[in-house]
Length: 127
Length: 399
Image 1 (cartoon, rainbow over the protein chains, first blue to last red):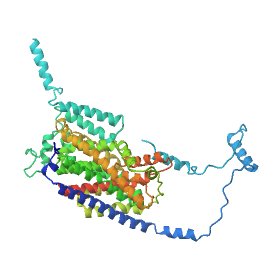
Image 2 (cartoon, chains in turn cyan, blue):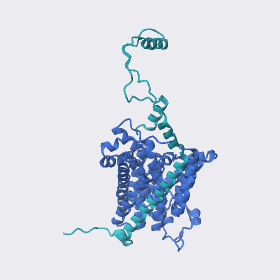
Image 3 (cartoon, rainbow over the protein chains, first blue to last red):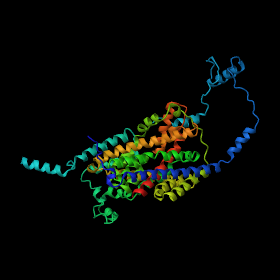
Image 4 (cartoon, helix red, strand yellow):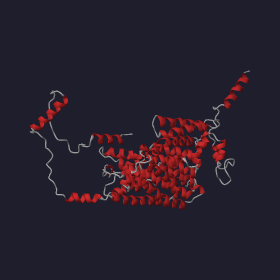
């Protein structure tokens, strides 16, 4: 038994080729308008950020500066341990603590400010 | 004595509100209560769902006399001219409160005013810094045209099919605006479907996004956006209005009001107007729009096979729109050699800011240190412009 579609396409007011014409025309117009806006605002964007390329070139020209490597685990740096101990003592107001280990932060640990972290948390809170 | 008592009681009951003429009214009252639950308890688009639900309740309670759907039936020559024009004076003379408020929908006044408020609340900065987002906003309009074809295949007239398709724009005011012009008789189910699906964006979109992307693609981190100058933000609404109105005058009402609202916000010298647009005006119009749209959902006209088709096609429109955005996002990801996370394409369906937050949440599911929100806001606000343009196309083609 052959299956027949129970609905008349477009209630008889539009055939499939006309409908496809509307779809293709419509989608093309939407794309054209928005692509035109992409072109306009890409151009304007370049106009408003002309210094960007120059800045990059300047940076390239500068001789590479050797930066002292990040402090390694200060196992034997007793002056650093003393300074941190003194600071903690000043902050806590008593000497009732022991510093067991001082080690550098792990790679990739968040270093943004508390305000940034708070802003991100606020904007990305779950639903 | 007993007979007189029972006759009197029966007479009272028949004159009271309990004697609803149609069972569909009882169903709609139950639906209204369910929408109250969704709006108040689940907080699904409460600002609009609550007034819509209350309008639905009022429209299905008998003898209230505050809304008469027959006034807006073009075959009623007491209120319509032979040329098919509504006699507004007659509605004002004989109408109830909701009849008069509904004129704002019928005459296409409320949706552009809502767009004014939306414009005043929207930051187009992410779109200005990354104009390519416009294309994702266009790709996500695919759902509109797929649903249009689907509705035609289900036997809808072209005008009703166009109104159903626009649900896929995920933009309530746009859906109401297009429907009030093309198929006002379907306004109730289309508005309810549009707002319900917008509220369900966090449920509808994620499975489509996961299905169409790989774990690697979802984990892509995008480059930080550059800061936007104030002058760029002022130029943006003016240029968009000029471009859109010149190419597609039918979209000028919605886009123009959206951009006016944005200009009020960004220019810095009309703070009072901007505040009014975002607060008092927006709130007043939202109440009027919601309650008068809800009033069009009388059970007899709402509970039909056509409503089921609208609900089904609305869902198809949302799914196809999301898929269109994500697939184009994948294409852009490939073209830029992995600089664009395809998830942000799903935000192109409008529904600001919900769709952008879904993209953010999905990105963070794969990598908690990935922040896509501001990148997704670009396609998200581009989607508002894209759906308004698509609305203009459908109005100019079908009306």
